[in-house]
Length: 455
Image 1: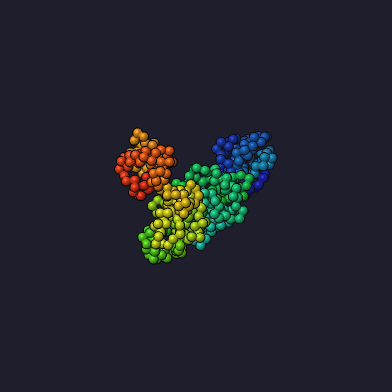
Image 2 (image 1 turned 120 degrees about the vertical axis):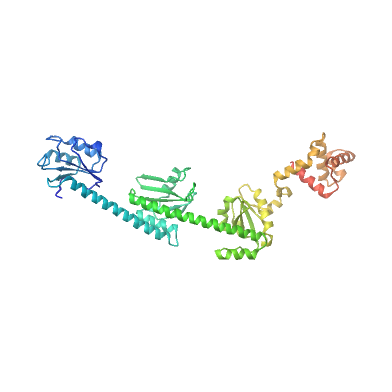
């Protein structure tokens, strides 16, 4: 087009062409424009430093000066000012209309955008093919790192690095996750001397099912952001599909557990066979936990949700590897699985954060096997007639001593420091108030439990 450079080199990206004859066009510019002028308003100024300085400060890409109209040639003072300020300056010959320059720049920008779109579509295709590989999400992460020329990582919802490419800045990932704490499902982008890092959540719900992080030593271009978003869509799809599959498998395992509890072990194994699952060999141990602990139990054996809780059926050897707040039954065959489940749930009630075995409860006495609230309610109802009697302290203390002495009058009276006839009178009164026969072993057992529950 006959443009002749007079100062500097037009190396920076030209985002648009602006034609202006104003002495100060900067209020109408955004930056990165190639400004074209004939110098009509500049006249024969001897000092162009102010005009050039304003353009440089605004961040224009360069200045094109048209000759053959107001000026036969570009003023030497303008050339000197542009050279001093580092502003690229081009001479535009008379036969080159400004509109022609605008059309060329517009066509170049369109070609650049088309190239970016083409690159983005090609990258999306490579990411999609990676998603179809057996490695699944890990393959997408590896491909993403190559596409951005940096690193990428797959992160669990708790912040654990599940898979990462070489050079992953785990410190930056942790920092980004901390910045987004409590906010869902917002993504985080950080820029600094180490480059740029983007962390995005995975999953379509209000709470993320995990995250992926990507970083590079340079700022991400619009094409790179498009590629990152495409990777996020593929990873989210994989997470949601995996979640749906897990839910379906859990429903199947729940049905299998019902078969086992009904004594239909053969039918249970037949249901599991097509999905590649199996039951541990006998003897088996039942582990009970809160429902949110199901993921922690799954690596240890056959698991399912049942009656609002998580249940695992594991081998006797594997039971020692289970940690956390769980209840563990004694070993037994599948035909006794219902009893094992009851044992495990009773042991879970006694757990305060560490595994509790049902066998350990047996050594703590009968009350350890009872629900505390139910035992106290039973005690209050059974002993109410004695509690409401005027001399209840004497009657309850006498009853406790009588039962502790296994019904021996002399031993109980000696323990209380009273005459045995006094004790006989009190026990007669207790029997009348309770309406029960104290010689009945079952009645004695109930009264002993009630008294122990009041301690």
